[in-house]
Length: 118
Image (cartoon, rainbow, N blue to C red; front, side, top):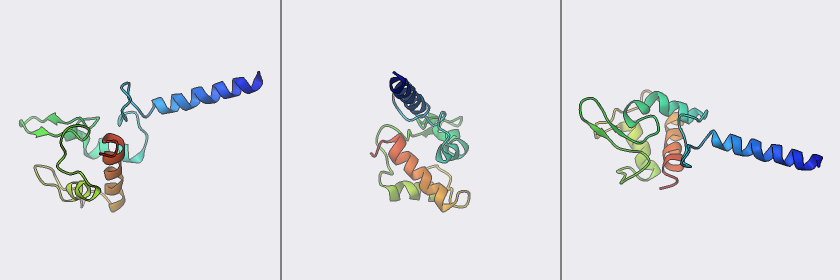
């Protein structure tokens, strides 16, 4: 009986922790993540791409693309890195604002968490 209680507590803890990193629809939640790369996204990217990377239209009418869905101009890790570092297509370059490590972490966040490897 004691072991069963321990197993149940462990399972609830695992599922509870998992819920902190995914939204109600099963997708990664930037807002709920305490990961450093999520913090970087909130500080540098969310203003244009939206708090969950869904894209949005900014005040001047510019449509900022979703980083989660649709056709992506930057697909490979190298292309995503280049877009973050060098900017272009209306995006500000971040090469002088972020470190190499921070840009690589954002690439990983976009490819593995927001796009699920796409």
